[in-house]
Image 1: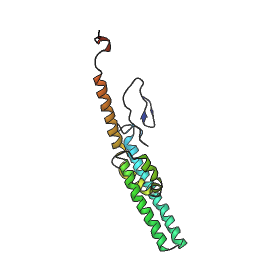
Image 2 (image 1 turned 135 degrees about the horizontal axis):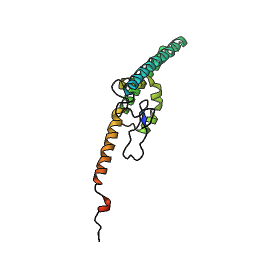
Image 3 (image 1 turned 90 degrees about the horizontal axis):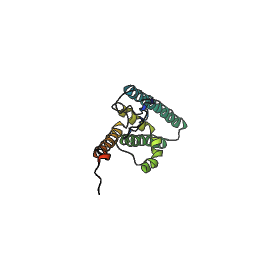
Image 4 (image 1 turned 30 degrees about the horizontal axis):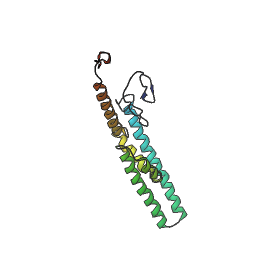
Length: 167
């Protein structure tokens, strides 16, 4: 079985559902093999470092607002906007790990998620401490699909050539 980016190739002749690959993990989340633990550690460190750098960039932006001396009201509004958008982005991203997000709602929240990118990064960091982000959702869907496939194939028992012909 060959592998590309942690996703095993589909064996010829095999039937049944295939696991959906996750970003940065491919399908290594199924059996926790091919460097799954190292990938989780890398994703956790990467998302934490990216969050720290993002907060540093936001700090520079805040200092720019202070230097511009545009007033305390606007400064409070900008800080509140980033804090609220980050909290909402965290919640939206966290919920997306356990259930499929509504595409229309996700599209309408795209701007808010862009502003609250720090919250999304933090959600990714915290989830990667326990599992691959989205693994629980994908595992439930994959196991359900496998069970449905197995129940369909067990119903088809017997040799069709030996079936009784109706007169």
